[in-house]
Image 1: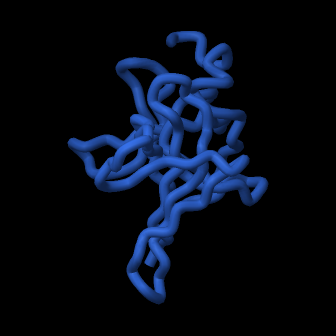
Image 2: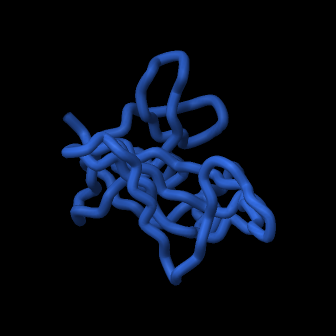
Length: 125
């Protein structure tokens, strides 16, 4: 069974906040924050500010260097460079090389960055 985890960004700034992962022993979500940034899940009480979050799902695969591959990553593969997306019609992760052409995501690729910090690698976006 693959690990269920998400990369979490602030929706407005697109800055990486941390990760959410399901603990396989307890089935509970764990929130792993970077740089002691806080985000709230559930109810908001007085004096707290909730961030709008954007979650990018882990594909269950690693690239040729052993790096986790997430939805929204820019990857280099034998056919070119594309972005990783979840195809809801096919129920699978794909690499979109252009708006109208995609490839099945495989391990034989290299993560070059993500669509927020490496958009320049995608000529068609």
